[in-house]
Structures are given as structure tokens and as C-alpha cells.
Image 1 (cartoon, rainbow, N blue to C red):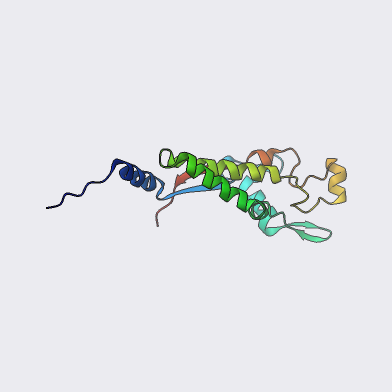
Image 2: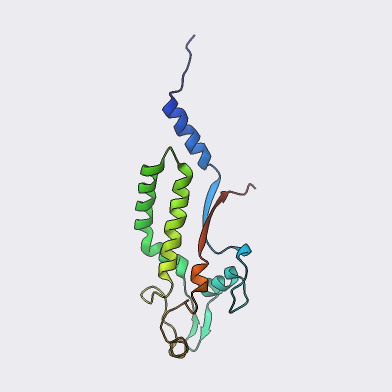
Length: 156
């Protein structure tokens, strides 16, 4: 009879991989964050309008696809950062990889607020009222609420 043994390093690797099973990282706004003080709308709804529905202007609907465009612009850097995090943290701290990813994407999204190379410019009347051409930034409240969460994936 042959007794099969599993090397401790392999066992540690298996545990690390299993610890990531069914986990997901979400970056953006969450329903429990409350409402934007200026619009009185939930942050999730306010950003949905900007990203998907669009905001009316004299030129038609203006879409500020912050999440989509930021992901496209920084895709290679995000992938490289995840690879570096895996090298640093796996198999000892697998959850740190997910946290690093969330923190990285959150930072890139926050940097993109007001970026006129990425987002459509404000209308001249908006610039006159705000004193700057900074799309999606009035007080900085919306920008400051971008966050991330690591959670268990919902079953079903």
C-alpha cells in the first residue's frame, strides 16, 4: 500500500486558493452610503445617471462614463499591479491581493474625476457657475465616496 502525503507548501497553496473562492471585489458606490447632499439622490443613482442615462445639455445627452473609460485607460497598469500583488502576497496573504486591487481601482477612479482628457467638458454656463471645467466635481463629495468592498459572492 502506498501512502500519499501532501507537502506542507502544497497544502498552504491549496488553502490560499480556497480562501479566495467565492469572493468578489466591487468598486464604486453602494446603496448603504446614503444620499448626495446636493442632489438628495443616492450616490448609486447619481452616478448611474451620469454613466448610463446621460445628462441633458443643449448639445443633447452627455454621458460621463467614468468607470468604463478609466478601466479602459488603465487596464494594463491594473493588470500589472495585480500581478505584482500576487507575487508579494500569495500564498501568505491572499485576501490582500483583493484589497490591493480594490484600492488601486478606487484610486484611479478618484483621479479621473474632473479629467477633461477623459470626460466630456462642462458646458460654458457650468464652467461660469463653478469657476472651473472639472466634470463630475462640484464639492468633491461624489469623488470622495468612491470606495471598494471585498465580500462573499452571493450564491444562487
